Image (cartoon, rainbow, N blue to C red):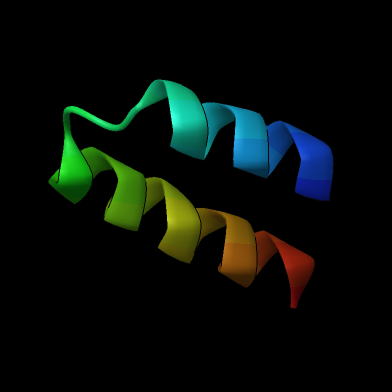
Length: 31
């Protein structure tokens, strides 16, 4: 799970807003 998140984060460096949204979603799913 963490590896996929890091991959997505690294791939989505151009869109910071999308990365933040994905980050929040991943955190919510983790919890």
